[in-house]
Image (cartoon, rainbow, N blue to C red; front, top):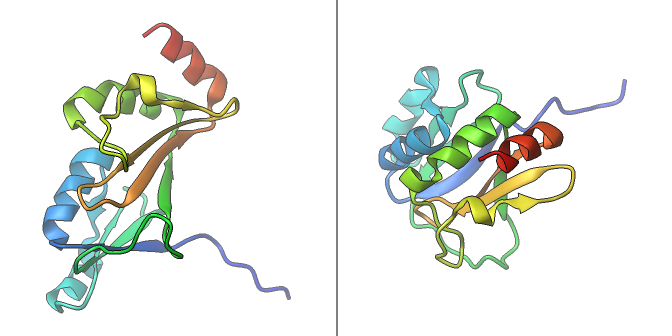
Length: 148
């Protein structure tokens, strides 16, 4: 039998304060601390695991100072897929979130990337990690954006 992975389990991020970062990810993306793995964070070198409600997407938050340039080898960005309705909800929340991109520019409705088959919003967390919200429900999203 051929070996195949099921999915990406988690992405590791280095942050100055794991619980402060978890609060930001909860407020911005709705990610929650995973209670059954929270004991790992008792070890200063262990991760604080946060995830989507279904647990299908997880981030492992490790303590430290983020470093490296955007051109360095390794992590470049983490993209989160949503449906059209959630994408529009995120767009409507942008003024409140005050998100910025890697150049320090404010993210607005006008900065949405139209990839012709998908829409994306690119932004950074408070620690400089590049993130993306994307939807492949192109036609419905285009319709909603045109009436906003």
